[in-house]
Amino acid sequence: MMLKFNNPEIGGSLSHSPPPLPTPDHMLSFTPRRGVSSVVERLLYTQRVAGSKPAPRTNPLPRLGALLALAESNTMFFGKRKRVLLLDDDPSMQRLVAKLLSREGFKVDVFLTGRQAIDAVGKASYDVLLLDLMMPHEGGMTVIRHLRTKNPAMLKRSILFTASPDSLIGALSGEVPTVVQKPFEPQRLVDAVRKMSQS
Image (cartoon, helix red, strand yellow):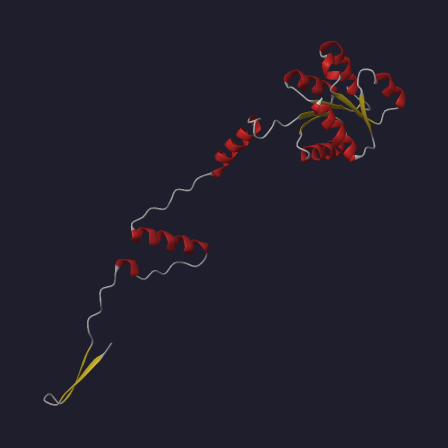
């Protein structure tokens, strides 16, 4: 602001500007660079002036992992997911069945050969075995022969999931009571797996 005084004794006018008012520290001008970094710089500048420190950023993944582990193990509130072993050498069939059963709440482990399936049965507990018989090497018959001598109870928890001839299926019907033939209806497979997992 400019103040102007008329003084006839000195024959002219006198202009006077008052001294600038002191500016508080938090009102100092700040010209950040453009872009996303400018927002960060302005935030850090404001926090420095205010005397505060940025809140530490926390990683939510360990906490989420702990919650998922709790849900997996706490059968009282969440229940235990039923575990299914799928033996099939067709990748597209593997993906289809695994996705279908996973949506229904099952945990699905997929194997390509009968030997892999046998090793898995020896290491983990399965509620249902889905066995394809029509495989070029070590298919469902390899698993069935192994279970006959090593774990006969698991034969009763097996489902023949196959396009094999009726004659072969009939020969195994006394040992493996449930059959889902390919091509299959999705609901038929889900119902068979659910019924077997609850038996």
